[in-house]
Image 1: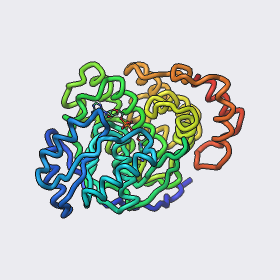
Image 2: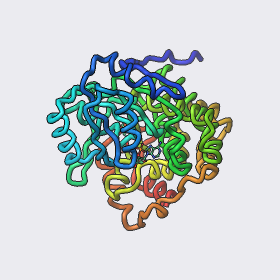
Image 3: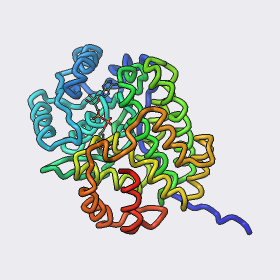
Image 4: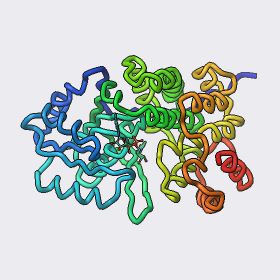
Length: 350
Ligand code: NAD
């Protein structure tokens, strides 16, 4: 019997990517290319020195630094940054850091339409997506808006060598999760599938090398390239059970983002790939293993990622509320999720 003819929609996101060792030096040219004249540099307190380096590279175009980016973009932080934007009459920003700092830039783009140049230093992938998040009274709200998509992304693998091995490992697994869910997303396409497969392949090869030698330049470049591709998958598709579950766990129990993804990923992979043959084959090719869910678990072990929710502080008594919340609203998933299946999955992850 002939295979069914595929049908899909693919929308390319307007975005410029500059990639390579030492490319941070191009940040002033990239800012000039966008016509920006008064740029605010964003960072976390811990990455202030990197923000100062950007300020120096920008010269007169930099009007200041806001170094208070925080995990999950609290609305209070956004309000503080908006005051600085107004005082300094900033017309754009450079977000240098992980998903938290890039998330702050997106919030400024959402509120004031400020163009963002993103310089990622982790593998989270936020820079490739039009997804914003804001946290108010411990509740994180997310949405999609093309206005928050960074105009330009500068990927410089040299900026990732300081990322500790443990964070590199969990951040890389976080990126892989985007690719896995894109492979079975209802709005997938051949472009997304190609990016997902190559993204997972690159990360799976690079992560074990760079946890042993964080300064390995070629492993860092491969991991960052993989993270870019996986982030682009996240930006192009609708995520399923894995992201829903991590979002609920992280939000309700205040768990670390990338660690939660690392623990949950092998379990959702085992559950979903059993009924997603196309995704399973692509991941089998990418990981060189006929059992991709098992291979993801082995990779997590090999790179020393956390493997148990209980190690993140989750208690058995927390699980019922998590299950209720995950089942409360429908979301796209290749395999129907009911209460007994979800309880089994979470108990496995404990
Ligand atoms: P993060 O940005 O919170 O960074 C973690 C810590 O590592 C921070 O203290 C940071 O300063 C430090 N750090 C970052 N890069 C470093 C480096 N190279 N060397 C040393 N230290 C470094 O962590 P993350 O995992 O990148 O981002 C997580 C956040 O991003 C979550 O809030 C998540 O929801 C969000 N996110 C959003 C999207 C999206 O599309 N909107 C996608 C992925 C993640």
